[in-house]
Length: 145
Image (cartoon, rainbow, N blue to C red):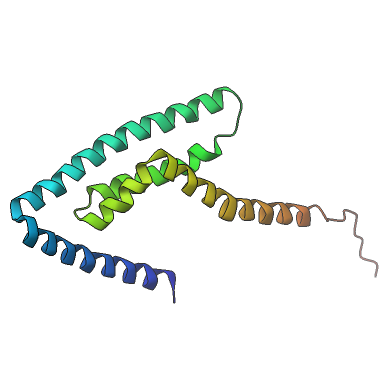
């Protein structure tokens, strides 16, 4: 399956699951408490996004000042951004995933997984390409007739 088809299918399934879960919770606790809970998670998510974003940016600057490559911070930034976007999206499933992205211990594990499984492989591929570029023979060419 192509990536856009898969992404569309995931968004569609999550949307239907969110609606179903909102209806079930609304049936149990009522409409207004459910709406209040959704708004509360959005407000809490905004606060967490701001707090974690500033903390990560501060660590990023400290790493740069020390001359250290801020690899974790560069990967954690987009994770925080996705987590904040998910928390602002109404629904409980997206809130759960969004909170997981904003909890520092879980975010660090996600970032470590991304770095080890995707960025290290990409770096190795890049180094292989650079090595292949270095296998160039230089010389002069003269056409004799």
